[in-house]
Length: 94
Image (tube, rainbow, N blue to C red; front, side, top):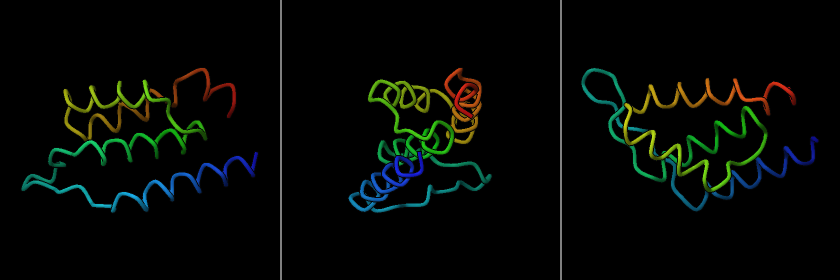
């Protein structure tokens, strides 16, 4: 299990090396400005690794992207985390 976790972290690090990390821009009211696809994918990958200790499937990334397009980023991130924490996969494995 620990070896798999190190492997996933290594994969995430190598992916983040390819794409320079940018902090999301904040608007005047403190909410996040719109995010690019790379930033959304980084948020989704991080959420999956932190909750389910695995990388998201391509379909899961696409679903998250479409949700982030409809909802403000801060709310979408919160909803994604709640959704992952309430999955059977999380409840049975953790």
